[in-house]
Length: 127
Length: 226
Image 1 (cartoon, rainbow over the protein chains, first blue to last red):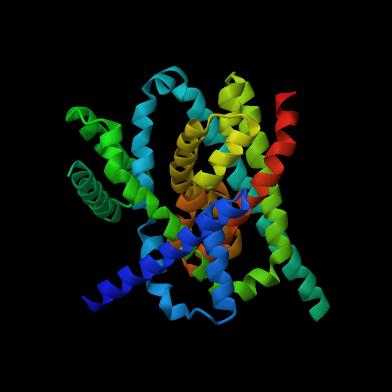
Image 2 (tube, one colour; image 1 turned 135 degrees about the vertical axis):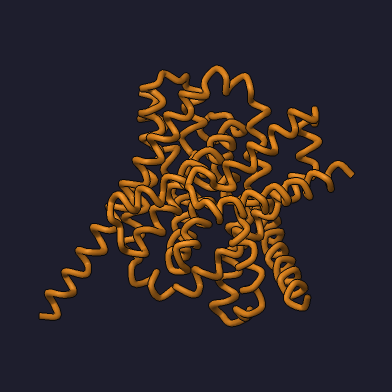
């Protein structure tokens, strides 16, 4: 029960940082979303030891592990677009499928190739 | 009242589909695919308007904001690794973002979608609020973009692990970047299932993909429309 309250409190903390981010975005007319600004604020506060890791770790862990739940309402929203989906659904799906596969293959291979090259270089220097 | 019932129902269906997924472990049974299907058929079956459902659903969607803030924690924990591989991360993400925008455009041309849909598809591989902002910026339809973002998430969540297996990608950093780049937050939640290091890499990929897309999309869009 105690753990439940700690998680809930930490989720509130994180929410406050997101709200703070939203306010900054509005004031400064930033092109980024408030939650990403909030992420950088928390990162900075952790870095400068203003915020302790233990003050947000549990809440963040909970939110991240149940994140799929928060995507569900936006996925249900698809039913509002019946006409578009009946008309173009298969085209959308083909584009998204092929493009996502391409992006993942390219990103994964570029990263893997560069990591291995770096490892090799270091190996040679080691010799 | 309806809002509260919708929240409760969504959580219940989510927990059930998560249990089912745990038992059967079949990628196509992901809770992000099954739960929305069950919920939409319930809405249609019981004649509930989406706007009524969303009066509750909105509260759950809102929780994505603190969840994104929460990605600061894995990033902070693995900051040394991230620093060490900074160059590799920037190179891989630039490649990923460029390919995401160009391939969405090229494939849209191939299946003969009109420019309105094409432009709405371009920013689909990044987190929703920024994807919608980019969509407005380049002349797309932000609500359609939001739909494409969620479909991308579901697709990447299911196909990501298969691609990792098929390409024999062993490096944790590469796995995380692939998932966070290809499927934003949904991919990042999958990366966290792999491990905390993969999760940190995916969180970083998600954030960088969003920022890079803000810069790259307006530059690449005229090329695609040629």
